[in-house]
Image (cartoon, rainbow, N blue to C red):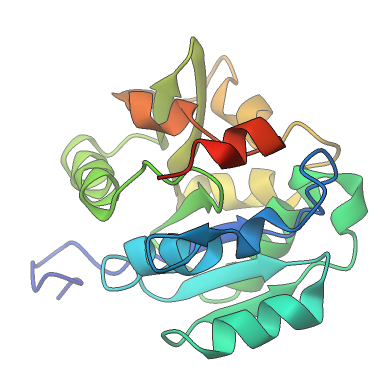
Length: 200
């Protein structure tokens, strides 16, 4: 039985990418206050209960992140010691962590897309089980990106990623069976002090 008690819809792990140093912001974006918690706790809460296990990839300020995560629901923490390479290293760390468990699929989501909700992620999950593509990826601002759900067949590609571009090179592959999921809310992310000032 799956997370929602549905036959044939097994649990999908959710990986929260939270390893960056937030250089343009000047402080760890993960710990910015948001709706009674932080961006990090909000990102975990929207995945928790909908995806299992919840894996959080940390890197910069690792000890502060561990301390912050200890106050919330149970998660599996993966420390990415290569975080300075860029997002690909965090995706690689998460994919390799899950590789031995042979999941049916995996969700990748960012810590700094606060307008993305649990309902959005559950709808993406349902789309994956209904359509059975290789990837269900969010579409926003003219791009295809994360959050995204990758079938098990894509884990090897994720585990081999290099550089700063993240999973977009995998999502955009010419032979990938992709379902685009319109998610304008994912277009708002936090990179600068001006972005942080817009947090509700």
